[in-house]
Length: 155
Image (cartoon, rainbow, N blue to C red):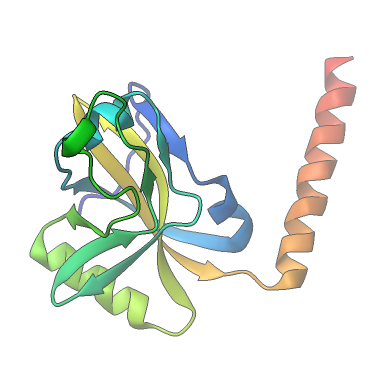
């Protein structure tokens, strides 16, 4: 199981900050992504959005849907559909384990970020449990307290 380790040399292209507000993040995993044509060039320019994206397992394969990759400007007829379903690349055992975790009540697979790792486009996905409204309020309060403390420390 390839879990994400803290890496400093990653070129992060897109973050899903909304996921941290909506979900409790349990475990993180790295997956490759199968791209076509000019999608890589568009991603390298930073024209990718994973705010509304989600992952799912279908017939033993892992997919991401709702990930928007803007058409490449010089791509003309070679551009793909910006919101098409894309296949994520992981080992079969890892996909099976993720599928079992996602089938548990309250769990889902959420993409957290898209980044370049040694020239390859990777997606960090996580198993996550949805937050209740009171959990979200608690997170907001905690963030506000930390922000206020940082202001006083900086003075």
